[in-house]
Image (cartoon, rainbow over all chains, first blue to last red):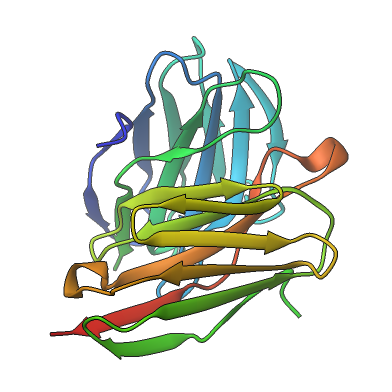
Length: 115
Length: 111
């Protein structure tokens, strides 16, 4: 158990609906990352936060995607007007910052299926 | 060409065999990670390397910065080692936060 939790674990939705996922890292994780993984592929970077500041968004993150980390603790990822191509595993990872880059601790993921 | 390439994509072994998974990358890095992913999604960090060699139990990871290559070895493999093993790199300089992942190597260890 990495201490990072994600909810829900599974989400099935119809095309066009909005969905929101939540990630709760442990309190020491200053950095928080969102990744997306499709079947048979490695994860791909979506965005990351240092405390409450969103410091980078991937070009994979279209205008339909938005992420927040309002108090520098938990984070949410919202997808508006879902499309079938959004079906994937959405992973978050936390990282404590002490000096250089460190180990990332992954949550169990939220598997999204868009019908 | 992907920035991170792993080989082989699939690997089947008999229990007890010595396993090697390779990772090559094409960018400057500050660190390389080896990760394990079991069916159902959970990813566990095995190693973070910036030089040399690390060992943890039956797992050994090595990296050659000059050749931009890393290997993950599993000694005395066991069916519980069956999983996807993923290599990921962290960039250097201003991009040294996010990970860039390989596609993973699916390892199956038969009893």
